[in-house]
Length: 328
Image (cartoon, rainbow, N blue to C red; front, side, top):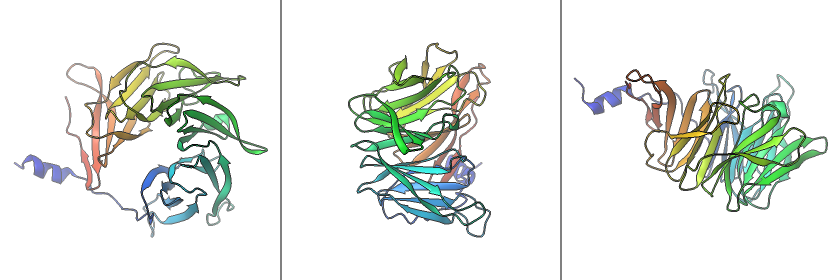
């Protein structure tokens, strides 16, 4: 019988391919587009780079474009719009959001170029996310001065159409509720995390001009909230939000009826390092931490007592991915 170390080595799945990004400084974010065709990265070298996501080609993960970002500081985040708009956004330390678009006609080689630069705030824009496409081409931007700005593409160009003050110490993350989420009829909602250690939900009623904090979540984190992510509902009649932060915890917030209370549970035990990034893929949650590891989690029914529990599926590091052992 093999010992535990040999079992782990045998079950480790090696990366299918490694991407040589050619960034010259630290990479802060990477996002894959709606159709999983392109990967965008951003860095302290003040560039955004786009790569092929496909690997079944003669040049897997080939570099598609290198986009200079007009800022004297790092580029923190990137965000892809819905493909009907074909826009890539990048947020910066200098308070600007840069917008890019593939200007080549269909079927021609891609020609990504700068579309516009919007001076959103005087302070750093720490997080951005495009709204569901049903709302139009709208971007939410969270900044270090505690403000969340809503930037909309209009006939006059990119305009800050509304904003709200979430806190006085800084926002780190923002995420949109799905268009058809529970209780979302006639209202737009975002969840915001920040340096005040609080997760808040803000709402804008159709026809209104001012955002309101309409739902208060229970106290959960004891340190900065680094990221929040509203889960796609995929037809499920519930709202689910994940949050993670410097307290090395991931919390899962759930609401099963519109206007009802939110409950919170911790995802496993505390991690060994701060939690920096969260991402959903339908019902699977990806957690990235400061120890250079990524873990995947999913709700599974326990055979022992028939209850549902968040369970580790896979752990990934630079050396490879290790499936979690089966649970009872």
